[in-house]
Length: 106
Picture 1: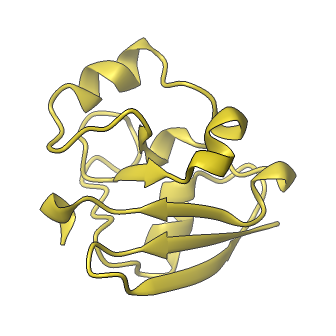
Picture 2: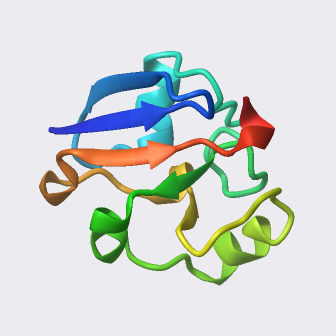
């Protein structure tokens, strides 16, 4: 299990416990985190679960694959630390992960 903190654009924080093997998006949906719509259900076919990964965790979450990068090309306000939360798999070393939502998902 890992503790993940979601930070809305306005600064409101929501911390959840996520099971290993689940996606960060699944943890958000399970706990009704505002700003993570996940319209495609985690199929990497939209960008409604776009997040900014805290710099301390970028090495641990890795880089987006080609499919994810293609979807991020359609997202608003993409930054170098942008990821789709449906493509980040929870594992022990992500305990304490902080992700922020872009303004477009407020």
